[in-house]
Image (cartoon, rainbow, N blue to C red; front, side, top):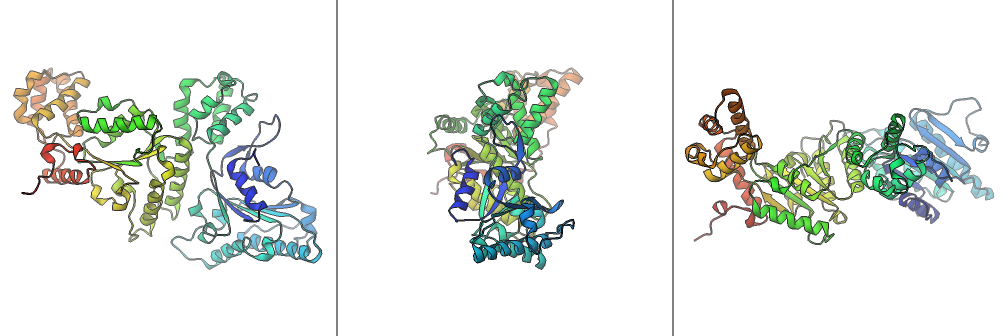
Length: 551
């Protein structure tokens, strides 16, 4: 037991204590695992691990998948002794219903034999890609599918079967893809297979080192270093990397690791997430001294592992173009931890959105310290109401709410929501314990602030504006200039300097005279008011925008 991964030890404990005999394995079920054996550097699939490690003593083992049908992979002579076994040379069932019927019939026969004469044949069954054989019924009703699910459910509840040494394993990547009669069955044990932790990666590197001496050469006797860097990647993708590097005769260098981690994980997640490259810090954030001080205090607590006062999440809110994503990048660069941005996790197929979220949550648990960034959170996070979207929005809301309030994530995962319409985010998702700090971000409020912002951006583009230009430009500097709008102006100024041979101040005057705000004034005012209302601390709000006390 002490040598087994935690999930495997849990299965063994539950079975040996007779607490469960049916196990739904979900999560990282498509990955490879290091198979046991002295000097063995072989990686195998999950079902191989179950066969070789968890149930080597079972005399009869059957497997089923839609492609191969029902097969006896161990104990063919014992199975053939069953009077109702398919005749030698005849085909085993390929359709799910017939395969489940046959297996149920055989398990009951073996259980009755045991009751009659005490001779017990230990039987195990593995249902690969169970969600394809017995899928979720979200959005539809299918009596035959319900009947199959109920029959599989009896394997874990019928006394005749539970008293017999009969173990069943249902493999599915996402619980939400499996029929709810099975995924929510209290008698079955839902076992999540995690992404390999650093300790498992280090052990794997050590065992694979003789097979990939060039690729792993620089890390001899210090495999914990690349293991820590590559946490979150699957063993399948890591082995593919090792094969490629070994073939090219290229060692994996320290400089490779960060880039490789990003590439491997984004590939594994199939465009569900992306890593934000953070090449800037809070020093690059213009103004907002109170906000920067607060964020730096939080980072100091995080580095000291003093998590009691660490926020579970932030909400960055403010008008369009005020630099919410830019602030996330600055915070990430200052912290030196990965920033994972949720991308296209919503899907048009029933159940796929929920399955995508399961996969994302599993990745976040494996990464260690990270920020999770959700842009346009008012649209991405779903609603309590299920009207009009087959309930997808409500299920997304429920899954996100549960994960964001998981206290075990405090100090490991910090959620960052960004929105120009925070009023459209469900109130319960913004409460303390999910989002503890709500930071408003505003456009410039005075011509001096607008000029300072424009001057800083022009300096970056090598078209510096002299401070003396302010007197000329001041009448034309717009109210409520956002970093996005100022960036656009700086680009136009640069273009005029290069194409018309103007001085930067002349180019700036020409651009400001023709300036048209990208966002209507009434919309900007509305979004500013929302940001003021959402702020968790008035210190984040400029004095000019703070609510005036009643007389």
